[in-house]
Image 1: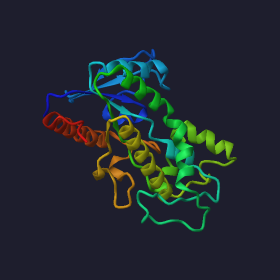
Image 2: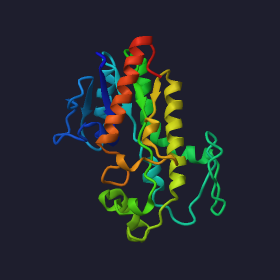
Image 3: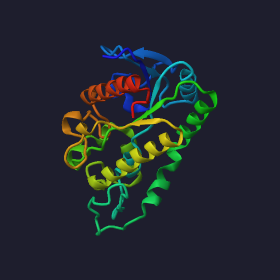
Image 4: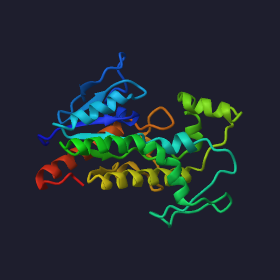
Amino acid sequence: MTDSHLLVTGHSHITCLGIPLKNADGDNQLVAIAAEPCFHGLVGAWPREKRYWEQVIALTAAHRVAISWMGNQHNSKYMLLEPPGFDFMLTQQPDLPIDLSVPLVPEQAVRESFAATFLGLRWMLGQIAQRGGIKPVLIGTPPPKGDNDAVRALLARERHFVRVAEQMGASLDHVAMSAPLLRVKLWRLLQQMMAEIAAEHGLAFWPTPSAAEDAEGFLRREYWSQDATHANAVFGKLMLRDMERRLLAADTDGSQGH
């Protein structure tokens, strides 16, 4: 164990770490994570409001903070996808298979479709840089779930997908879903974009442990939560142990735990 301490903040993926998603009154509050003395979490209104992120900025004046930013863009934008769908070559992993039976788009076009989702993060990191203080770290978010039949059975638990299916004029039982491999590529691109943003601001990016992925890059079944997009508390423990290791490394060598 290390005496270091980390305040974990962000969107819904922090719930797997044992941090509640929201407060009933919407006020920002630091909460302990059970049996995890090295970690606390910041709870606030859901959906997140500007005052939550302003609190994150303020906390960096005296605390080491981890930021989990969104992480479901590949699901919210592309889980349900009208035929024929699309594919692209991920330049980071050009050896991944490409589906030549669907339209191919440039990776840059996919990047541009995600760019707006990072504007709030860029604003916040800019504010933190102006104020000085302790540099935060950005943390990765869970890989996608790969079994479309199993994922389809979970779609009804998230209102977003119910609304999208209605807009597509289809029931959840029959709505068209994207290819699982496409979602892996999209997720990997999102993680790469997070790492690039971290590097632009001189910050560390801590990816999710590779042990959470199966041979094809999907979230292993033992780490699935009971919805279509999130990981469970077992995955959360894996993340906490990895973050604890990085904290110890950072304290030992004076780095940010890269």
